[in-house]
Image (tube, rainbow, N blue to C red; front, side, top):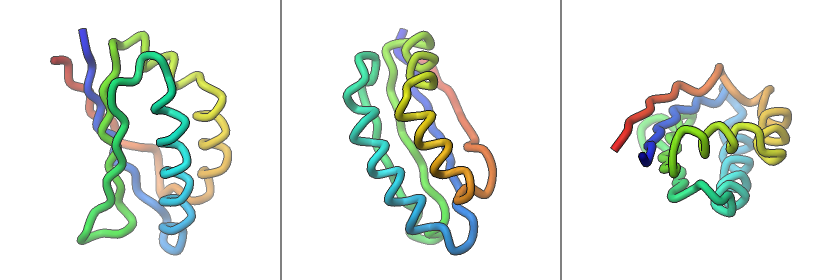
Length: 94
């Protein structure tokens, strides 16, 4: 069953541009994953420190595999100083 994920991501003050650039790089890598059906990045027009990732996966197993990908680990290490906190995830089955 397909799984939608909405990830709300917030940058620390002053780190917005670095985080945004890294997220754009991440999108390109994630879209090549076999279980990824959709991976879109949105930036708030009112709050430039806030981003939303809209994701669609084949299933929960595909999402779990995504979380273990090397590019996700690389992004996490690179972005750890730019994030205000962990991403807030909302999962929805369709």
